Image (cartoon, rainbow, N blue to C red; front, side, top):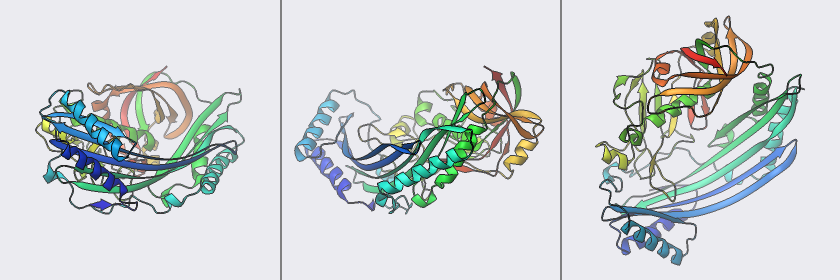
Length: 455
């Protein structure tokens, strides 16, 4: 099974490595082959700052011998290097501790055909340096031209990537696919009257070139975000409604995905333990993990073990429906894989999400804000103050204060805190403005109450 616009070389290379492992006596094995070509151009103050182009190719092997497993990778694909890779993997396996749960994915769960997910844009490999430069320059210039108070630039970058992934195993699975991506990013600084600078950035990333935001729109958005921070002050400590702009709300989907990891469940390191099929959030909240969406950055026809990908509802109408599993953690907890394994070329499969989305509601963001007399519109989070075991949440933040139903003055050097389960249960409005940020989509969310602390 091959879904690729690139050559068949990655699949052939992985197959060669697997054949050597079988001949050397591995009980079970799988081999991956990854190739990628990256190109980027960065400008700053309308001058070229950096141009990079690179191509990489590597293979990885996992062997299982008497319940002991090991992984090895190499970027040297000569016959001698592949033979040495097999020998090293078997030597490492022999000295590893036996693991009763080590093994390949169940053949019955692996993909035997694949949907067309539109992961490859034929235009991206054809993008040249002139195009990248033009896009980066236009992006930065539009940000600088937006307002005289934009006085400096952190630079703008336009990047492209196309890659292929192939996986074969001793159960008979063989699959490969190719994908592409393009992205654009800019950062600028706005100046206060006292000379202090406020920086902000904005970006766009997609599988296909034509789906990217226009460089002028990216630049203007970055400028607007820097300008709206001018005059920011601290806020007093209080409990108020907090409105999460879509970009901030997208981070909540990632938190739920991390807490829904089967490995976290096994380690009892998640606040969602023992809460399957119980209400953990407002009925307004639905979070979906789906790696089968066409033309999205988190999509793939099969996961890192060859298991067919699928739509996994994590939270539906406020109810937590279940955890994400790779094969290893599924065996440890007597569950089934959810097609959620991600595989680096030199490591064991790890649990991860595909495309995460918080489903949009029916209310406009303007209406959500208009109902608040006194509250916070959250635009920035800083730090890593999340305890996944207890659900306690506390992070540095910045945003815009809401007064009498309207966005008023910017605020900074504050802290927002609460317990994630309580926060999710306090969601009382979901916007109709869902936006994609990489592989995550989210709308505006409002929580009826959070603690906002002056720092």
